[in-house]
Each structure stands twice: as C-alpha cells, then as structure tokens.
Length: 94
Image (cartoon, rainbow, N blue to C red; front, side):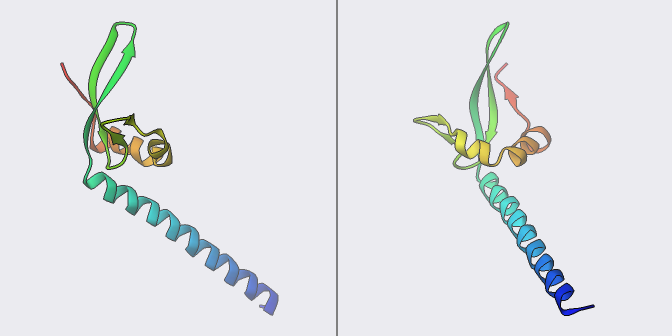
C-alpha cells in the first residue's frame, strides 16, 4: 500500500467514525428526551368529525401554551415515528 492510499483510508475511517458517532448521539438524545415524555392530546380530523386522542410526546415536543412544536417533531421524525408505532402507541379517548 502506498502512502497516498493509506491517507485516503485514514480519512475514510475517520469520516465513518464521525458519522457513526453523530448517529449514536442522535439516537441517544432522542432516547433521553423520550424517557421523560408523556402522552399529549392530539385532535385528528376525519370524515366522521374530530377524534380526540393522545399521542406520545418526548420532552420539548409539546408546549401547553403553543401546542405541538413542529421543529422538534420534524427533527426527530424517524425516531418519533418508530416510537409511536412500536413503543408508545397512540391512545384514543373513547
């Protein structure tokens, strides 16, 4: 292996470690937010009228004064979606 190839490999290895570290931090941060979360009211409009239900909201996703914070929800949407489908399933008021 030449010197040029070893530098390229070293860069690739460092870049991979950075990406893996960022993904691990992303998942860890969501997990910490979700541990302290709670169910919040989520009104769903349908052809049958408005259905009142409760959806899981990690800390920071919902504010009592302003409602759902779309920036937080969109930032963590992939993990939040998996969370509400498999772990904290939505609850209806009926």
